[in-house]
Length: 238
Image 1 (tube, rainbow, N blue to C red):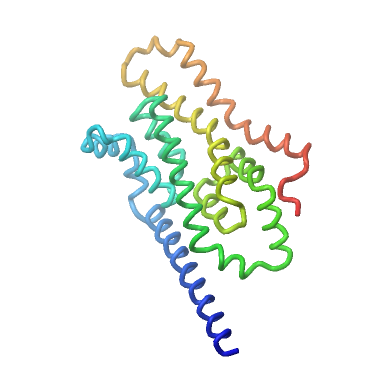
Image 2 (cartoon, helix red, strand yellow; image 1 turned 90 degrees about the vertical axis):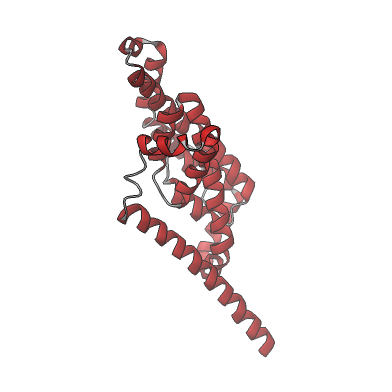
């Protein structure tokens, strides 16, 4: 009996240590973003100078930087806009997309490893029912939350605390952020190219009109997704 009690206490202690590490990481990240000049330094000019020093490795450096930004809760549109401005609408999209996927995956795995057991130990009967529902409908739940532009970093960490399996999370994230990432990077990258070239007649090209159209319809995507969801059974229903 004593050994069992001792073993249980050790498990609880291990869970407490893990969740403490996770909370410390999150609080440190929030402090860096909101109480230092880190975010202010995240602009295209500063990062262009930094990436130029890496030479041909600049795409890899940016992807790592974006991944780190997700873990630090730096707003995704800020990093995506900088990537599009530096690399253009197409390569910018690719590097931003890869960085977002790596960041979201890393955040999920950290949340799963450091906080899942602690979250499960605190869940009551009702929360366990929702947790099981999320596990059954993991792909649909994650896809819906991505399509309505839920805060990227908090959701990535938070999903790691639930029972949703890795591959449904990964595939739903890959699909859910594709359109929004493309619209943002394509629009910013296109207008940055025109601005940098100084050839203002390019504002009348089909690509510019396409980027404008995509940019203005992007806020309506969440509304459309919510309307479609209302006509179907909610994926979180236990």
